[in-house]
Image 1 (cartoon, rainbow, N blue to C red):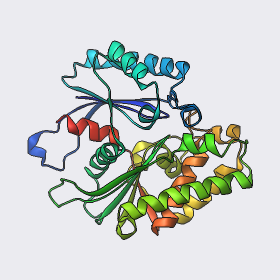
Image 2 (tube, rainbow, N blue to C red):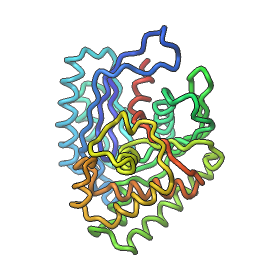
Image 3 (cartoon, rainbow, N blue to C red):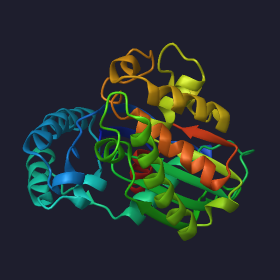
Length: 313
């Protein structure tokens, strides 16, 4: 199966096999390949309401490479989901036409609710048995953040109790507020107030404050976790299911927001395409932990991409 997740900041590919049925219902997918390109499809969408031609072209180039991989690996089923930027753009039809001609399938511009549920499915499968429910899963993207509360029964299946998507993401908050390099104290305060209002709305819509465990997904969370762990290189196996305390998240966030983009780029675990927006992503995570009362976050390398793949099973 081939799953593609196209968000505001990145486009990602997962080609995977189903686990052997004898491995049980909680067995993970068997990865064949995972790839990521930071194409910034949603650059400027918060301001203009449109996908920029150069952003669509960057995405087309990455998608053409993915199409070649899918063909070479012989994937039998393909699903591509496009999220926040494609929902918000007035010229999303141009994007869909590009995908059809490049990949040969229709992209699904999923709702925020569907995005949240796919993220939850991807994150919950494979969580250690000792992680208590209910779970609050947050997927911090480039344009939006999804909040999902649910349970994981002992057999490994997941049940969603409530889900909501709000328009706060690392790219959107950077473009809207954190425009200086480094951002000013006033800019950080404005971003924090904007984020807090959205987080409070989300936590009213879903019972996130009652969750026993906070699980964080996507590049902002995994990058903050890698920095907190003091890694000298990006190591997914060390990051996956690492438990990072609020104090650690707060320190990393404060440090990132006082650095220039060049200084952030020099951090060993920093992806070049994330250095300019990671401060906003870290701030979103910090505010979520404050408003929900979470003492720690469990980072997950598995997210909506895995959820899309499981939806094809």
